[in-house]
Length: 157
Image: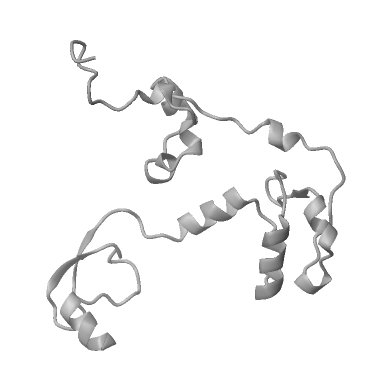
């Protein structure tokens, strides 16, 4: 490996046990299916998951109306029709917190949360209190007030 220059290098992505879109790399550096395949990496298509032909379980709107047997049923995501399940521990948590059963798969819920994150870039702004030049992940078009560290700490404490 030292002779070929491979010593100390990471394993090539083509040898990865997981497809690119199954890893967290896909969250930070989104690439299309074509871009991934062009680089010789793996991509997972979830076509088989969308072929569920079993009975459709009607999810009650109120958690108080949900029976224990929901954990034995396969649920379908409303927008994508991808099947998912609710495990007993998850059901217990939803009941404890009085949260309705989700109507999206865990992956779809994860992607919805990611959409709410700030983008991974910095903008030059000024502190609204003292006018100091700062860098922030909040773009200038955003309505939030942005403080420098000193002004933030005086405002909070």
